[in-house]
Image (cartoon, rainbow, N blue to C red):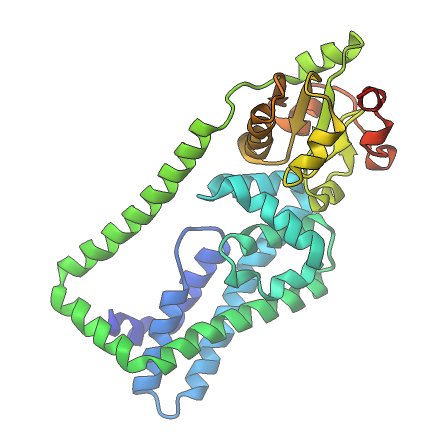
Length: 326
């Protein structure tokens, strides 16, 4: 491993960081630490080589991130959902990123690479929010430089410890590779098990867009909750007619709005309607007997040719006449 780092350090960093920025599950921070340690031990002076690796890392980051930036600009929310389906934390990755981006805007890119999963979705979200390319490159480049600098600095500071670890792994030979592979399998397996446990816990029942439309046409429209984060509603500023905005974290506010005998349909922007299913389960535990996520969310509603209305037309739950009857 040490020989590989010494011979192909620059190329290894470029390929590894580019693969990570394109969304592949290949951690790049360990590579930066190894390269930083190798430079500290074998280069004199070390700073020109460190600056070169830093430049290569930032270039690879910007190359991959710019591709996702334009994908977000062209395809909007579909790009975000596709990325979250690749994530082992897809039940939370989009929702958390929507909220963080909604609070800090494009500035979040300066620290996004330090938060697992945040950078993967924040980059295309910047494109979907129609951020300017120069501004995107400025904040994304800053974040990439800070992230790479931390990795290289850790390698320099702990160069002797890294060298000792590499020596120990080299003595293990094939055993070292099996140890690393086993750790990776255990990590992925644990995350997969957690996701399976989550899906078993969540409500499995869904209502199709056609069935919801039929209820609306029959004059028995349920309460429809739009629990997409504000950032996503900026990307897709349309809602199902009559929908009420809600935050699933504020369960008491939701239960105060609707009587327990009211039928409720919930939609979100998460793959597999995870957030909507989670809220449905919580409301059932609060005594609501008829709560269902909308299968496919607003995208499926639109694809069925059903009408939507602009976000500005929504004024809140207080305008729902059935809410006022409580």
